[in-house]
Length: 582
Image 1: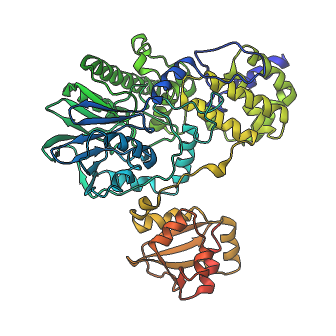
Image 2: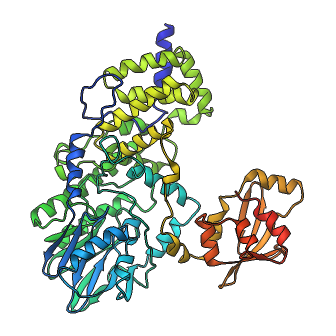
Image 3: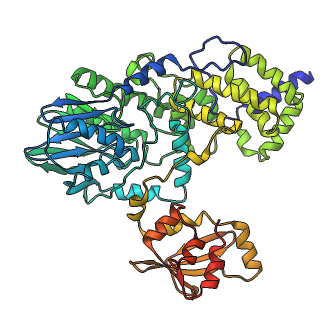
């Protein structure tokens, strides 16, 4: 009976831990404990397409740069000039596509238009700008809003999640990163961000050197998304709204702008256009009208199915983890080769939709009880006979290739006993085995990256979240930059300063705009305010370029004070205030 009660206790707690583990449809026998370097056969085959970079003339004067970079982009030739649609992520990759274009035409690129504000579509522009002919950079009017939503204290978190999701710090091999479901992602030098000089919106017409493109609002993976439609030639420049994998209507990065219903309506609108050529931001372009219509319909219906499934579950109070575990697409959608979930898994997408709708409460009574996870884990492992016995239990699951159960149990034990070498080694190997058979590139990369972090082989110093961000940060309002710094304070130092009656407030003036902000330290936070009534008379001045350098962590407050670039009417007190920052 004791053994039975322990198992009941275990099953009650198990699903609270490490929801990254899931059962995979694919399994391959291998020896116990062996590192089977490999990949799910479907994912492995899918990513092969991304190796064939080429510039394709899809219609007269329309060139599509496919697979030069993580995303695709294009060039539209007018009578005398060229319009560029998006520009990739890394200028070095974009330059390769530009070199191919110059074999076809010498006409100057005078305008760049963005489909949306994701880095992989806007950060390669210097390759075009360096030619010296770009007069306009055009984007959705919502591009500015999206930029300002991104430049917050959460940006390092978003960058870290993106790095893990894309496997940017994994080895490029079957033991690591083999590519994502939507393209090969890799650091490619220095990105380049240039703010738009002209804003447009849905309903506008983009007239250019003898050409006309309809501008259509097309919310998809973010809500600032627009697309361009050549009505005469029935060409749709679709950005990330048309994608030949299972639609990623939610992501582990939890982007606010992904709305399943809006994305579904975008696809429905595309159906009404009856495009004959679709040029997507990721994946191969399509020029088969019937295939395009079929994929649009099935993608739309897949999104609707996921959304309805989650909403019905919410209405019927089905606990989240039970709801997600049981999701299954209709057979005709599940079998569509263009809708396999090689990017984010179906269950991850569904879990994201649930979380966006319902928040943290999973309709699971366990969420209503508060206990520290380490305490809970130690109790559980104790009832199971300790970490060494857990290893034995986990081994039985591993022998049956039940890595989901093994991983959750080992993950719980690792919480309780983080230094237990045997638990760590088996957990790391279990994560890798699950990764090697996952059809989702995101699940694979998160598992392999997390395993490397536990193992101690993950080199965080190689992560470059802000490379090339200088131009982008210089374009945002000054207050956003000052707020961006606030997360870098040391809460303990604030309390010490208050206890010792040291400086806890200043005025910060940003030059040359002379925007002035009051900064207040207290309650283990720093608050940035535009209201100066009653503010400190200690004033500090800084140029915007130096403020950007601070945000990028290329310079410290102390270095700026020593060089006089951070000037103050009370240098001693200013130095004490900035000592509150790490």
